[in-house]
Amino acid sequence: MMITFGNVSRFYNNWPALESINLQVQPGEFLVVSGPSGAGKTTLFRHIWMGDLPSTGTVEVAGYRSDRIRKSDLPFLRRKLGIVFQDFRLLPERTVFDNVALPLQVAGTSPKAIRRRVFALLAEMELNHRRGSFPHELSGGEQQRVAIARAMVAHPVILLADEPTGNLDPEVSRMVIDLLIEINRSGTAVILATHDPRQVPAGTARFLYLERGRLVNPGVWDGYKQL
Amino acid sequence: MIHLIRNAIHEGLLNIRRKLGSFLITLLMVSLSFMVFDIFLIISWNLGTALKDEQENVGIEVFLSDNITEVQAVILADIVSGMEGVRSVYYVSPEEAEAVFRADLPEQADLLTLLGPQFHLPPSIQISLHPDYRTSEKVGALARTVSGMDGVEDIVYGKEYLPGLTRAVDILEKLVILAGLVLAVSLSLVVANTVRLAVARRALTVQIMSIVGAPGWFVKVPFLGEGLLTGVAGAAGSLLLTLAVSWMLSSSLPHDFLPGRWIMLVLILGASSGAAGSWIGMKSGIPKPRS
Ligand SMILES: Nc1ncnc2c1ncn2[C@@H]1O[C@H](COP(=O)(O)OP(=O)(O)O)[C@@H](O)[C@H]1O
Ligand SMILES: [Mg+2]
Image (cartoon, rainbow over all chains, first blue to last red; front, side, top):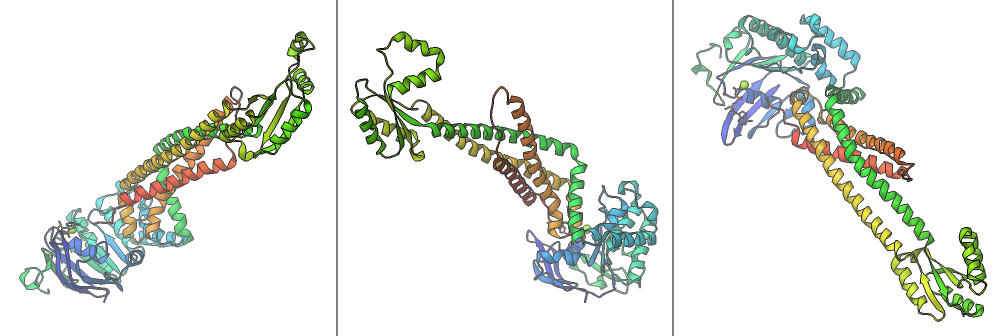
C-alpha cells in the first residue's frame, strides 16, 4: 500500500478539519477527492506530505509513518512526492528551467544530470521554448504545466494535485486534467482534489467525496455511480 | 553532497545579490558602529602600553639631608635594599648628582656656577622596585616607611601621576568590555531583524524548498551565511576605516594600531554576533510549510 490513513482525525482548536478518515491508495492509482470548499481536502493532502500530523490515528506514506517519522526523514519522504497547487507557487525570481530543476538541486543531483533530465522533461511537455522565461511572462496554463514539470522532475511515486485547475479557464483545465491522466498512465499514482469531479472521465479514477472533514458514504452523493 | 553544499552557498550569494544595495547599507552601519569599538580598543591599548612603560620606570627617589656622611648614606642604602619589594638601590653622591644635572640640563648648568662652590645638590638613593610592587598602594607604603628613617629629607615617586593613569586604564578596560557587549547584542539584533525580513520576503522559496525535499540545513545555510558575512565583513570594514583614520592622525597624535590578536578578537566578535543574530532571526522567522 502506498498510502494508508488509519482512523485519522485532525483538530484545530477542538474543531475537526478531518474526522475518522480511513483511506488506502494503491501504487499507480488515480484518486479524485472532491467536496465543497473548507471540506478538508487541503488538510488531507497536508497529512500526506506530513506538513501536518494527525491528532489521532496514523498516516503511512511510502513506508513513513506519521507516529514515527523524524524531522530529518521529511526531505526523503517528500522526494517521493510531487505536489501541485492551485496558485502554481513557482519561484518568481527563477527561470522556468531553474524552477523545474529545484527538486533535483535540493537533492544534490549533479548539474549534468539535472540538465539532461530537465531538458528532456521540458521537451516532453512542450515547454522547451520557455525554459529561459520567468513565471510572470507565462500564461496561467503554462505556469501550471511548469509546476507539474517541477512536481514530476524527480520521478515521484505519487503526484498530489490540489485544485490545479482552480485558476484556469475550462479549455486549459481540460489540458491539465489530460496531462494528469497521462502521467497516471505512465505509472505514477495521482491524487486530485477538485470542486468539479466531472472534469475526470468516469472509469479513469476512483472518486471520493469529503464533507466537513468526513469521507461521505458514496451512495449519498449523486456523482459517479462507480463510487 | 558536494553539489548540495555548492547549491546552498550559491543560493545564499544570489539572495545577497538580489538586494545588494540594502546589504551594503547594513554593512556600512555595522562597520561604523564597530568603528567606535575599534577606537575604544586603540585608546585602551595605547594607554595600557603607556601605563606599562610608566610602571617599568616606577621607582622611589630618596633625598638625604646635606649633613649626612657618605658612610651613613651607604648604611641607609643597605637597610633599604633589604626591604620587601626593593629590587636594587643606587647611591647618588652630590658630585654625581651635579654631573648628571650638568649632562641632562646643560642650559641650566650656569645656575650651579652662579650659586657658587658652597652649594651642592643633595645626595640621594634611587630605589628600583620589583615589578609586583609597582602599584600605587605598594609604592606609597614603602615610601612612607623609608621617609620615617633618619637622614631622609624628602621622597619623590610618581604618586600624582600613577594612580590616575592606573584608574583611567582600569575604567577604560571596563568600558571596552561594556562596549563590546553592547555591540555584540545590538549587532545580533540588527542581523536577527534583517534575517527575519529576509526569511519573510523569501517565505515562498522557503516553503517550496521544504516541500520539494530540501534538508532543513539547506534552507537555513543561506540565511546563516548572510548573518555571518554581515558580521565578519562589517568588522573587517570597521578595521579598514579605523586604520585609515589612525593613519591620518598618526602624525598629530602618535599612537600604535591594534596588535594582531586584538584584530582577531574584533573579527571573531563580528562573526559570532552575526551567526547568533541569524540564528535568532531564523528561529523566529522560518515558517512551517503550509498549504
Ligand atoms: N492550520 C489551520 N488552523 C486552523 N484551521 C485550519 C487550518 N488548516 C485548515 N483549517 C480549517 O480546516 C478546514 C478545512 O480546510 P481545508 O483543508 O483547507 O479545506 P479545503 O481544502 O477542502 O477547502 C477549514 O475550515 C479550515 O478553516
Ligand atoms: Mg483547499
